[in-house]
Figure 1 (cartoon, one colour):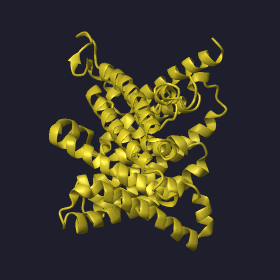
Figure 2 (cartoon, chains in turn yellow, red):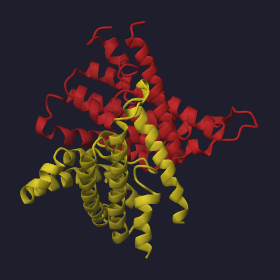
Figure 3 (cartoon, helix red, strand yellow):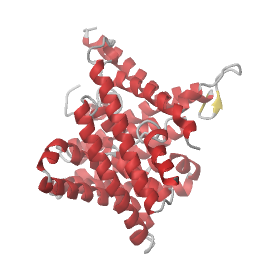
Figure 4 (spheres, chains in turn red, purple):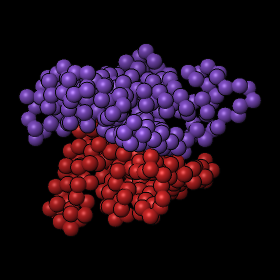
Length: 191
Length: 203
């Protein structure tokens, strides 16, 4: 039960993009088309779940055991970079259609702050293994949700008459604000 | 101003190629920590320090780093400086370090820093790279200063913690929450767009 609540909390209430500002760059960059947004979301969810497990293991079995917490940041980013590389090679070998669908989005994930943010938050909040995994999956699903919703709105927006100076990023940020406002309405859902 | 002169490389980051308003890089810390001016300024200074130091190191090592592993090498160099800044803040400014939370380590994946290394420092001389980093740092600092000032004045009625709004002013709580960050930055981009439009019409 507690885990289900944690999951819902990271999908809706503590949405990574709209309430914690993690992964805003891809949120603004890859939200022009719904199918591209969905592929990106899928790739991020996948990498986030693995990162949650890997970073938790590295943190607890290597860094804490040998008192190397000062190296946390360097180690986490290396773990993420090599994981993304590994996932890319693995997907390319096992499922070429999926590889083509994810395409350029996979390497971009390395610099997505949602991933490193996840690893850091798990270590900061001292989550256990299951909680960390649920946070990773929930965060990824929440990211996908925000990204796909935004892409849907932006596809409609192409037909709208937006004032010249606000075109592009300006109006996207205003929409993101309204979405964040909507999502903050769920805040009372979980204590 | 001509491209390639030291003055140009320094000043382009402040207005013409402002990292936030034009390149839309480094959005996460920009939006997340700017609810008060103190946090915004601390973030801008920390990120600028990392940017300048990594540009210095990477531009001096640019002929040694093999291009196939350059991204990984950049990230390790950046992460080292971020660890340095983080330990410094924890030791001397504990409150700020606490309120910035995970956003100090997240400077590692700040696209402004990695972007400048890839686009500039890995191809240019040490002097130009440092000037470029300084300019980008100033541009980042000014954008964060404006954004956090608007949010703190409207959201708390204060600026740097000093009361600036009259007593009857009711703080707009929305400005310090997530939606306020998106709205303020969206409007800033709009204002920047108006300036640019006026210029391109040939004043």
